Every structure is written in structure tokens, then in C-alpha cells.
Length: 548
Ligand code: XMP
Image (cartoon, rainbow, N blue to C red; front, side):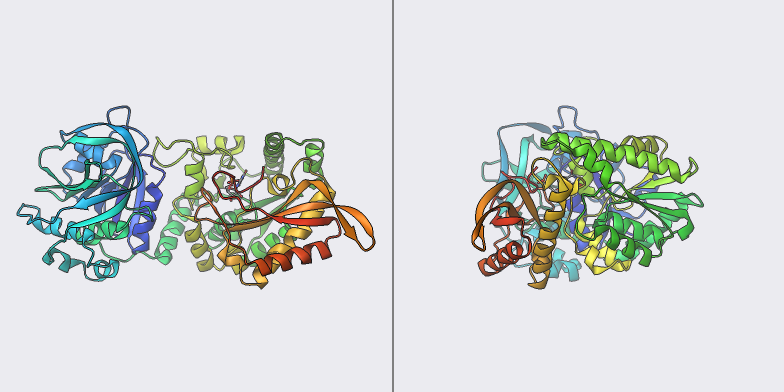
């Protein structure tokens, strides 16, 4: 299948480049920026994009296989990728007097480009032509080279501390940032282009058009990638790699691991597939029963459900500090996991499959590029079992280049229940980090019931799908209220509902006040232990999504 190869140097937005291009219907592959480019890797590649990076090319930034400069393929450098090309080809890159972040104006000049690369340059420059829409590019790319590009000033999205101070021989500067540094360059002879900003980011004006003219106008790539084809490829790879061995997947009940489970069940003989789910007692209402139902409907034969509520609650007894609680749960999870997996008696050759998404890897500092910086470390990507398996090359993460919305799409395709596919994310430590302070069975029960009312009402009122994540938090204080004729001290319940695209930043969902008031009344009327309901109006940053 024709594809665009993305060399990843560790930018937080590398996967977004792939996602944008896949949205156009073109297959992309992301590999570490310093991977040697063999014939096998370059097979069917129509163009190469060099990603951004948190590093500097003059420090220990990853080097690229110089074969990219003589393989004849079109190249596009983004941010660090542009600096990498410029430095590799004899130009100069130096630190900026001060970093340039966020929206910055860029001006692209319209000139008659009487250069060897004229046709490609005209195509590329028409990405900046305000009269040309994304649809024009997707549906009629060849005619782009016949149109005269227009000059344009637009807002691009930057995040860089270095700049080109001298262009490599053969390059021309055609776009300049508001503070006067090169923002767009093209090569006079070769199909090589570079932008200092990030066209993959949604706030970047004309970002999609710029990527699309490269992919279709310059690289002439066919639009033939669909999720259906992707599934076929992943399934073929899974079958070849796993062969007749057993596989084990730890299911959390969330979308990602359930979709990974569906993929295994629809690919391998069900006898080979072992699914394990640990009920920590910190799950949402009816979660275990629904996980069981969904997986059995997908054909699961070896579904191991471990009931460990008592163990988890005992370990959490008396613990109030959020980090101590998280660590207690994480450590016990590993102990239970190892004990229960040992009981299965699988032979050493079994494969461990994880439902890791690309964003999980990025957030854990384990992105495809070796240089991905650690942003967050609280996601449950590693454990001794996983590490040991990884050392023997027996960990498979079939969703690791997909984003959440793509996993949802894949889930639908594989026949996973709509209820699961739409489900909001749920953190590994579960209700424990939504019960502030000490966790008890009684508090879990109260929170579980109240949260079920909240979520059910959101669904009933058609609000659930507008929200990225909604949940309730039980506060460790009681407030005064009246019930009948007497005073009572009820718990305070905080409701949280946020909009987001990946959980890394979040806005408060602007709750219709009528719904909020009605839901609050319903909760206090139904749950006698709750005396008061409040709504959390904090965005992220400065707050996090979870309270602990
Ligand atoms: P925060 O609270 O850091 O959460 O803004 C961002 C997203 O991550 C989820 N989250 C977790 N997921 N294990 C997980 O699997 C965890 O320890 C964890 N902590 C937070 C959170 O629900 C939100 O979607």
C-alpha cells in the first residue's frame, strides 16, 4: 500500500501528523528518526516527513540516515525536521534570542518560481493559497501546479527555540515569521520542503492544506487507506507473529483493552486467547458484569475474572495520601497480576498483548522517537511482568499508533458494543482517586451509585457524547443539611464534566443549568448519604482532570 513515512524525532505532535494524513485516506508509518532506511522500509513510500523534536540539531539531536537525501523521494521537514535537513545539507541552525511559542504570523511571498522544481513548488505553494480549499486539494491535486500561488499572511503554530540562520545551498526562503526568521523554505531543484511551524496542529491556519499539498500535489499519493484495510494488515501481522502460541491480554474494562481483545478474538482461534480482568472493587457500577457480557459476546472462551476487592480495600485501609494510594494500588495490582498469571500455567512462549495507544506512550515518555520527553508518568504502561516479556520481544501493542477516536472506529468495525466504544476514559486506580482521603467499601458504594445516576442522566439527556469525560468525586467532608424535620450531615459530591481531545488539556463542559440542577436534585433525593452536590469549574491546566 502506498504510504507516507514519518521519521519521528520525539515531538509531542508526531502522531498528529500521521493522524491528519490518515484522515485524508493515506496510510502513514511512523518510525524512529534514526532508523537505518532499508529497502524494506522504503517499499511503497511516496514521501518522507521529518518530525519536530524537543532537541537541538547542534546538541545531541537524533541523526537521520543520509540515504533520505539520495533516495529521490520528496521530503518535508517540520520544525526540527526542517532544521535537521538544513544542518545536514550545509546550512546553519542557531538558538533564537527567545523561544517562539503559539500562534505567530507568517507571510508567504508569491513570486514567479522559475526554478527546476517549479511544478512541485507551485503545488506546494498552493497550500498557502486562500482560494484553494482542502476539498480542491483532495479531489483535484494535479491541477494545483497550473494555478498561480497567492501571497498570504496567516497564523501558524510555532514551538521552537532554534532557527535557520543560513540556508543550505539550493534552498530558498519563501515564508517569513513575524519576527523575521525563515518559516517556509523550498529547494530549487529537488522536491524538498520545510516549515518551521507545526501544520499538524489544529490551531495552525491552513495546516491541513499544507500537509495535503505535500501528500497529493508533490508526492502524488493515492487515497486508498481505510480503517478496514488497516485492520486487515494488523490482523495479518498478528497472526504471523503469534502463530500457534497463546496470548494474554489484561482487560481493564475500558475502550482500549476491550478493542484489543476484540481484535485478538477476531484474528486468532479463541482457544489461544486468554483474557484476564481484575475486579479491584474500585470499578464503576456493574462494570465487571458488563465486561464479561461484552467479551463473551465477542467469543471469549478463556476469560479469567479475578475478584480482589477485599485485598485492595485492605491494602488501602488508613491510607489518605493520594500518591500513597496510587502506589499501593499499583503495587498490589502487580502482585495480583503475577500470582494470577502464574496460575494460568501458560508456556513461556506466550505473548502479552496490551491495549496501549499512541498517547499513552507519549505521556509515559516512551514515544516512537527515542527522544520523546517525559510529560507524565502515571499511566500504567509498565510492570515487571510487562518488562520481562518486553525483554524477550513478546509484548505486542496493536493499537500503539492509533488515537482514541480511531480506536473507537476500529471497535465499531469489530462489532464491539456501542456502550463500550462510547465509554468515557476511566483511570487505572479507579474510584480510589475519586474518593478523596481514605477509601472504604461504604464510600465506594455511595460513589458508585451516585456516579451511575449522573452518567445515566447524561445519556438520557443526550449530553454524554458531547463530553469527553464525566464523573463524580466523593469529598472527605460532611456538610449540614435538613432531611424532613431533622438536621443531617451528608457527604459532598462534586460532579466533573470536561471537554478535551486527548486528556492532556481540558475545558469545563458548559453544563446547561437546568440539567445540572435536576441531576443534583435526583442524586440527593436518591442517595441519602449525599447532602450536597457541587460542580467543578476548573480547566486543565491549572487543575488536573482527576482530583487526586
Ligand atoms: P489527569 O488527572 O492527569 O488525567 O489530568 C488525564 C487523563 O488520564 C486519566 N488518568 C489515568 N489513567 N491511570 C490511568 O490509566 C492513572 O493512574 C490515571 N490518572 C489519570 C484521567 O482519567 C484522564 O482521562
